[in-house]
Length: 228
Length: 92
Image (cartoon, rainbow over the protein chains, first blue to last red):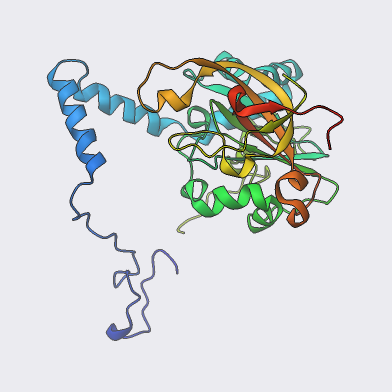
């Protein structure tokens, strides 16, 4: 269903469910009562502000900071590793420190980079919840948090990868990493063939979010497309 | 810590980070990660003991038996030392 769809050949009795006449999806109004934890969050936040522990502006600034993190941060780290062997060595030794070296705020996170090679493909999952290297990749995609991905990635990673369009030769060993405790993981994808002449900034455009989770591979940047 | 370890096959109530699908399974220590506050206490706001944490590598054959997609593929997970027991190398 195209996002913007103006020519209608169906009559009014046949509107697609959940779509406006012009084909835009409706989002249901959030009319349900607050949940226990939503009330708790509001109560604690208001108390902290009332007592001068924090301010509304600080809360908003922190949300802003969280929203500003994007896979571009991780892509810059990967591109540096592809072009600077000494940096790559440091990244594989201690991914948190190597990322800090590039100016990224990693916080108290313990970050491990796992390297894809011709023989090995790495895949990241958190079966318990949704642990994700947010400081480098931003917020996790919705599918990363689903029960389907969390349960299937450890059980049938090859089937999951095939659904993501990643077909690996049988000779490639898959290593799944379940973030069960204090570590966070980022995949260092293999540098694609044919990119030998590209510079670091150009290479970063090849590094997709999914390639750093392991559910994708780097690919040539596509020109921005309209719509969708 | 032995090279080969088995995740304890316990099912205690409460907040536990050793995933159920790994309990009773044998793997090898991939690396030691240092000591971290025990999440079984942290989850309840209690003072937490520092516990050694390890990355343990399991084969898919060990986890899923005949139903493994490819037996040699692996799964690594972080397991606290108090959830691990040593397995002698000559044990089956």
